[in-house]
Amino acid sequence: MFKFDELCELIRLVGSTDVASFEIEHAGGRLRIDGKAPAPVVSQMAAPTPTVVSTPATATSEAASDAATRGAPDAASTDSGAAEEDLHFVVSPIVGTFYRSPNPDADPYVKVGDTVESGGTLCIVEAMKLMNEIESDRSGTIVKVFVENAQPVEFGERLFAVRVS
Image 1 (cartoon, one colour):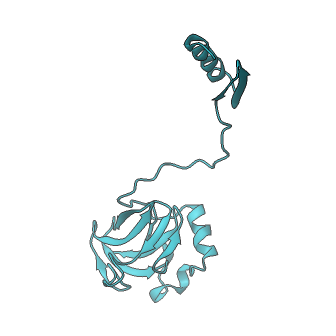
Image 2 (image 1 turned 180 degrees about the horizontal axis):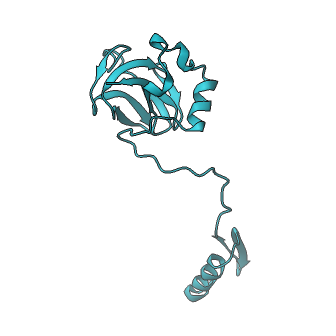
Image 3 (image 1 turned 120 degrees about the vertical axis):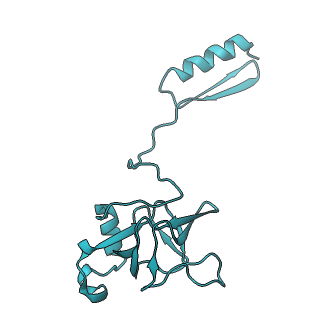
């Protein structure tokens, strides 16, 4: 079999190249060294924090297109025909499952028409078995809930429309 120094040298050689894996049979033994894996093709986005949502007044184009594909109404069809610029949108900071209440038997954290304070819990987004409370970053009145309970949500997807007070 290989000596320790030989193994170390092979590992160093494979690690210093773009070789994905290396396999050799020698003296009745087989050795496989996995090197650098090919870089996956991933769109870049900032790593979301799994606690408090803080978003600008306008949603990203990705979030806007996602809301449109889910059938979210345009601003003219929201309560009182309010213009979209009068509203603040709370969006999901992570991919996960949206829950309106802390457990299935409890009342929702908020409903349309409820007044919320900055820092108040609006919902939970579960991601990888972790329950992340989503808090309001503005005080105001809930005008629209965009997602049904127990439905999957995407990063940046609109969850609530809040008329800022």
